[in-house]
Length: 259
Image 1 (spheres, rainbow, N blue to C red):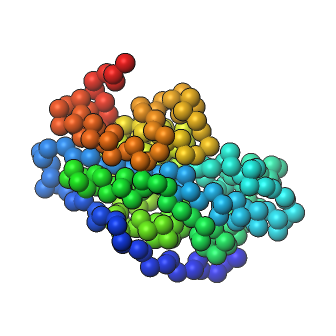
Image 2 (image 1 turned 45 degrees about the vertical axis):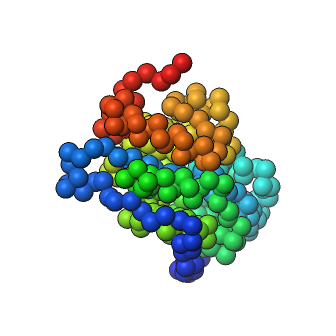
Image 3 (image 1 turned 180 degrees about the horizontal axis):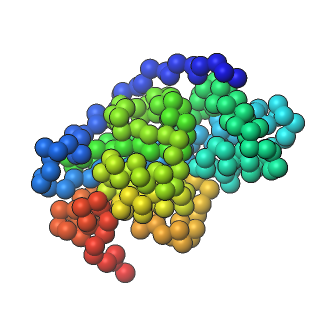
């Protein structure tokens, strides 16, 4: 249980644009606004549901708790401790901590190989750089596993290591997004919407996770996309908003959305 995680696979860089220039550099102060777009990882950039379910089933099975993939699906995008507590109610906090450690030990061998990028993920990550900006990834997943998943999915080359953060959820994500200067945040969970609000960024939701359009709008999403294939077109409007002042300095919209 205390073994070090397996080494991350070598990143694939084919068909992935290199990161754009950093826009939190003091030398850039006063320059025209550019998009800094944060992305959630699980169920936003990648479909990691099979690997997460397999690892949860293995970990919980070791302590006599039987779950199915369907049982795990509603928890997609949540922090690991909350997932484990939900699937094994009544488990003491110290045992949840031990289960988390066991999950993180097993995930590289059980959860990584089945990860697949969603259609449009590479193009979405590359899109901000085409407008002079950059992409960042902020996830609830354990940080070393964020890097592993990005590498296996062929997406690591589009994001600087310094712009990848894990072990954060909801409002905690928002704090990091604000530090990174995010003008928008893309995610599949109501917690991602809350993160965008804390960061003062546009909340862009996708319905590739366990929450539908109605739930994401109710949570406060500014826009809901059916998939990341729609993201580059949306980004063009966001860039125009930044340049015309329809979005504030952190991306928040200052003009009304069209009816």
